[in-house]
Image (cartoon, rainbow, N blue to C red):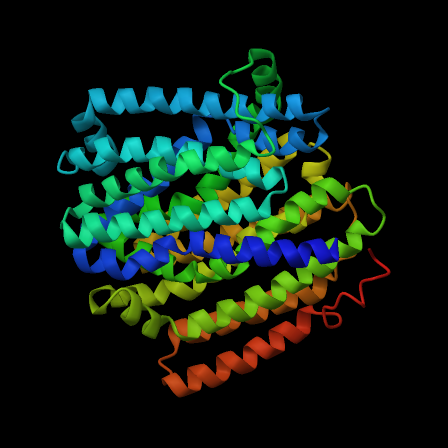
Length: 471
């Protein structure tokens, strides 16, 4: 498993880092050709897609993830995979028809005015393509096809970047042009994804109702959990829009994009670890493997957060421009929240025990923490309050996953040491966010802190030889 993890992290990491960095790579383009209000509208459309992709397909992709590896033969795997695909196609087709029939009403409800109705019409078509592409990417992941997934991710990222350059910069299409670029990229790459997935899971033009009912029986209860996860991850954007408007949301979204550098760095871990755990969780050495993988995750994540927080003003100036300078104050807090939100994959106990109700409950608690704190802090300290609420919700979610999952799948964590390292990282982020230090001091302090944090979480250097006994 150690060798497979190292291999998959490299493959997943390179391609997924590119896929997840599309928003970051587009930031210098979009912030120079779109106004802050238009960029805020683009962010709101993006988080609306995440919500639609959660609710409409009833989390059927989660059922594919759970049942695919235990299917009895290729035919059963095909039934799971392509039934999920066609069900997703059907529900997003219904959404597209509804929005296309009443675009002005939809724009008023979502964006607060009819000004961007044309962009919304195009956006709903992009959402449908992205939803289907997401299903195919999941198939490749759970079929353990990391190279194929890497190819698809690279092609999707390249198509999105190229289309945005043409439609936003060359054609000066504004927000509608950006949505057109997203639609063309998603639908253009989707056939490639289907071909790649069909190499192991033969493409089927059918939706099997008995299979769909089986999957939805598992996944539908997860919608409530997913809604709570969504609230935890995206409530800050909605509340910033409600309290401060689309202009401020544009600034906040730029800060979030820069903070997502940490998610780019961790993409390989998150994508590679879960399939290995699901396939090998019954083997006696797997808990020790999970512990070491988590420590390596922290040894990368926490130093990355500290360095990003230290360089936030320079990163904002470089990537977004002077007009977005206020975004620097939220970058560090958001980066730490993103890192903690990605840690749940290293606490697999509840998922392995199929305790979806308990997962839903803990995510509801975490989402409630985020929403309540954001509502309380936004009127007092503005966008920084939303960033702190996001961090608090992410920390609550991670803590509950680890605490409640341990009785069902015991992993020999060193909890006190991890908590101390996370607290130290938060302290450094606070210093960089509040103290007007010169760049040289920020650099020196961040590098020293990064080295200290990495040493705190690692029991011994990560090596294949030291883990031979575990595997």
